[in-house]
Length: 391
Image (cartoon, rainbow, N blue to C red; front, side):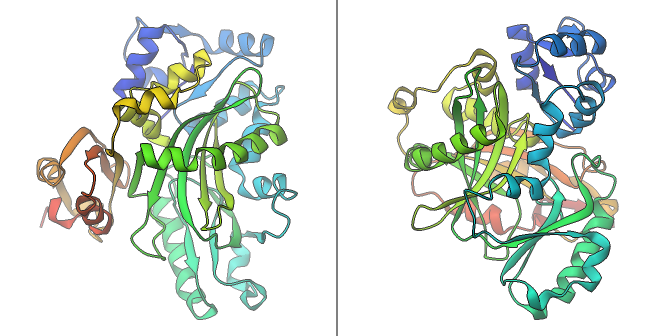
């Protein structure tokens, strides 16, 4: 069963739903996003009754906006609690405390930040909303002298993004302060089958422009990225599934792996793969894997077979977030054609209504071996060259 909600559903996911005749819950939001009466729609009351009768059936959502629907209609099942364990980063740290006994973290109310005794904290540290999304409100603090400016940035961030997402997705009332995890960052799409076995569908390297960068601009996947990290990540997702008792449950995980191979989770996003139908669709463009079909049908990727036809190509997801410093109100348009000309092999462009959300869209691209220049260029770009202003 599929639960669709705003802000976005891709044509690829809609096509997958139609071709497989997957049940889709007929919420108001889903019907606003998908105007296709031929889909296998199921009423909200029938969906609720079906799930209550069989609470272990697979459920996928494209958006965490749908968490409120789950809490409202399925509050007698274990699903709301499982979701909250992961959405609340403080609860996630508590869940994994035995696995990482020396890991430092601290929960703080937003109104207490002005009076925080930072001299008692370990530096460097990361501060972010305990319930968050898309690296919104995330900051790194290297030393005490930076705190005043960071606090001002946090308040600015919260005022800017307030109202874009419901509190189940982004809640700025509580923050988590935690130690800065060193190493390379990876994003993983994974699901737990009806036996509770963890199945990894994709591993993407999250690339940053500097130590201070906390953006979501570039994620890349390749044969080398997956094969070199698969076993390390598999051990962690097994632990998470066992501790949270997960079955027929999709998740999107972000982790860091240091030079010694030590892996620590950053966050776990429940009931979905990457937001905005990004990483879930990327497996199709990169490897011909339909992650949604694999989840619902309990299929495990045969990586050896998949990589037979793959050499050293790299597949990347580019988030076109507005880092230009130009106000949304002063932007007339975005030159997508100029943007696509800067890439060797664009696979898919997705435009986003920039007046509704602080992003211009997403680009899926393929690059050949040794061509990291275009990834570095877009990683450090403020995107101003593509923006046409009103004045």
